[in-house]
Every structure is written in C-alpha cells, then in structure tokens.
Amino acid sequence: MEGSVTSIETIHPSLRDPYTVALTDELAFRVYPDSRPNNLKVAQLQKGMIMIFKGRELVEEGVGMGVPVAVYSDETYFAGTAELSRDYGDNEIVMKRFFMDRISRKSWKISRIVNNPIYRFVSRLSAGVYRDYPISRRAIFPLMMLRNKLGVHTVYAKASPRGEITVTYTVKNGNLGIRVDFSGLSRESLRKVVLLNEQGASFFKRFRDSKGLDLVDDKIGAWEHVGGDWASLSDVERTLSFSLKQLFGCRLFVGREYVKNHLAWTGMGYEVEPHLNVLNYTVSIQEHAR
Image (cartoon, rainbow, N blue to C red; front, side, top):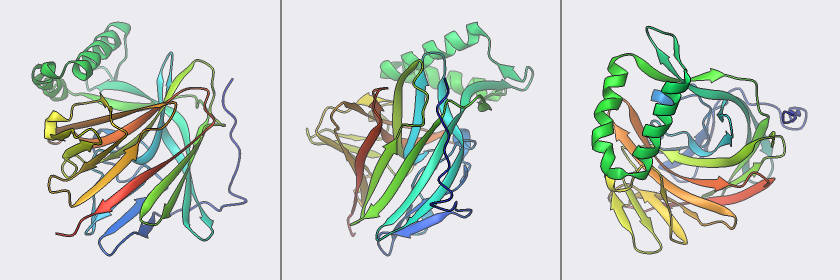
C-alpha cells in the first residue's frame, strides 16, 4: 500500500522561484522548488535549506538541511520531485513536500544501467567496508576513481513513489526549526527514515561535540555515531557553525567526504524509527565575527 498524496496548494500556493531569507548581513538560507543547484552526484535530487555566507552557497554536493531518505527492505528511496509553498504568518515559514520517487542505480556508458545482483552485492559490500573501516578508504578511493574513468556513475532512476514526506522550515531567532511529517509515507517494509542535514565539505571541515571531541577533515569519517549530547560542524576557524542535539528515539550520525570533482559533503543525520509520525528539531546557527 502506497502512502497517500494530498494537496496543500489551496491553503499555501506553490512557489515557482527560490525562497531566500536573511539571518544576518552576511548569512542567509535558501530553498529551491526543484533540484537546484544540481551539483555533482546529487544533481537529480531535491534539496533542503542551503546556507549562503557572504553571497556564496555553501552546499556543494550536500543536499541541504532537513532532507528525508526512506530506507525500505528492498530499496532506499530519495526525492526527485517536490512542491514548495510558503506560510504567510509571523515567522519565515516555508514547506517542501518531498515525493519519494527515486532509487540509486549505476549507469555505465557501455551497458546503460549496471543493476545485476552480483554488482549490487559487491557495491553494498564495499560501501559497508568503506563506512565501518576507515583504514580501508585509502584503498577504496582509487577504485572509485577507476570506476568513474570507466564511465560508471550513480544515477537516481524514477520509481513508483512510496508516498511523501512534508518538511516545514521555520527561520526564527537566527536558527532553523524543522518539522517533519511522515504521515503520507508508505510504512510497508519501511526500515527507517534518515533526515539529512548537509552542506559543503570545502567549507565545513571541523567537527566538535559536547564530550570534547574535535576532528578536522578526513578524521571526521564517512558516517560515524555521535556520542555527545550535541555536535557541531564548522569551518576550521569556527567563523560559522551549525549544531544539532540528540533526540529521544533517534540516532545521530556525522559524516564528511571530499574528493575533488566527485564528493563534497559534510553533515549530520538523524536515523528515525519507522513508526514515528512527526519529528521536530532545531538546527542552531552560530556566526563568530573575525
């Protein structure tokens, strides 16, 4: 049974243009009604709130703040289609309805889509080794580069939608409030939902948490569990940072990957249990003058 799709356009007319709201003279958030800014491997996917600092979008290969990924027992679903609308209230509120209608596949110049069971098994195995054993990454990176030279690339193929997830972004007091409504998502064989909060790896290079952990660049890891009560990502000098707190019933992870012209994301994500209907959290922003 697929998740239901309901219309919100009669209450909140859809936005056709990007929506930008300033936090300070130098800092702003922007959300697009489509998959822009179309960077690198995630060019086809919908994005959440993007940070803009001194006129520069910081997202690179990140997907932005508050972007859902639905993990089912058979496939992982991403959003390639969305609708953006605004609530004209006292606060700066914008809603993006993500339709979970894309699945990851490998495209090969010689053979259109590489999607046989053996290739997928090896791909999942290498991804697991890369994630769980940091020492292996130096060996796996050259293999990734070779695969790209042979013309094998990630594509997000259209699939029958598994429903929708509506994310409401509220900019207030210099922070970003995020409310996630899972009620329109199909729960059949759903294992978990991941809420991604990503920006670009060239700017956000430093990780800190409440336990005193302080990591820079590739010391952060690809997808590591956060043990502290809170964690933050910033540039090396801590000019600008964003932070998240632990939430009851969720698991918080952090990751960073940077390979020139291939990977360029840094972020934190909540892993959410499949029975949850609504999730609320805050992305705290700190800007330190230099």
